[in-house]
Image (cartoon, rainbow, N blue to C red):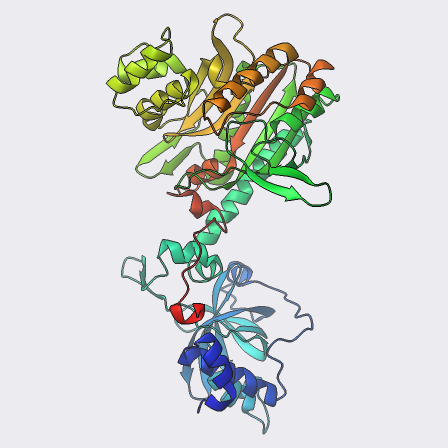
Length: 526
């Protein structure tokens, strides 16, 4: 086919199109000239998927099952008057057999000779009707009797070649594997790397399992504000914006904790929310500025009760996703069966460093950090130093799920003071594969103590701690009306998804992770 370069010259100059892209645009024009809309509007009713056809086909009877399906054209083998091709829908791939005399009977053979053979490309969407059959080599296929163009793709897909070796293992050549391209062009990643879809299906199954688990216990799923006048509920730097009509500064929430506690004050016995939170912090394979958390608050419970609930819930997630409590994560097999190991924070640090820091004040903690080769700066108070020591010496070595309990009061402005250990709070984190997956408290419900904790945070902010909490007067007012004893929990859905899907990076479990601006060609910038 000769390319009509005059018709595409303007587009070429503006978009710097490749020869393949120009050819596909020309094919689009030719289809329209033939009266074929490359982007039709009407519904195309599907009666079966590729997976259903393969699962339901009776090979022994070789029954001719009539089907209607649609998907992307992923390969073609043109053989004169007949061709084999491969169609991919959301469930997988299936071979199709296209005969000129079946789809273009009579005198007009253009649908096969011109459209199918010359104007369709890999990546185009087609709809087909026909019947399922099994080929002489034993492959379940669809014999096409009707074919319709549903979408013309104007960009070629990356060429990924697959073959099966003598042991039945699939070998992939020239795969679409560059991480930056995969994350930036997730839509292409999902097309050419179908296994990626399974990761996100498992993530959805994880969330559904947790949601059903909590709902079955009678807790109410709620929604709280994303735009907040005060960034509270966690120690983090917020994103800031401005509301023009109200002429006020607003923050993207760093946590939904304080609003959920207001609902407990209002009379609910148990509330939870799957929330998008935002923190203006560094990025890594464990951190994305936008992330998902599930927070739960239940009245008349404490952190010991919450540990039992977390064990039960996460074990149920592992069983739902894998059918067993053991999950392969990198080189490790992690077992989520109950009960999990438990350390206090000071016990964990001493276990890995042989240093007891439980009675140290800030100057001694700085010396201990220096002894351990851990950098601390002058803006860090006692809590931050302890957190750094734990994060460097203990956390990375906690592979099996482990509860770390009883944190110093300075580290937890929203947790209740320990009932029997002065200077500590009733808090735990669950650590797995060397990273925190959840955080929980016996919630602080003394408004006088809470105000004092907020004021301590203000002092840390004056020292330069950009993650110190703000003082929320409305939340304090809510506490003054009375909040019953409450256990609270936050679970990092992205972190837990990484573990449950054996993903090395948080970007692998986010459809569209935050990326640096895409580099533009100099010619495009001019």
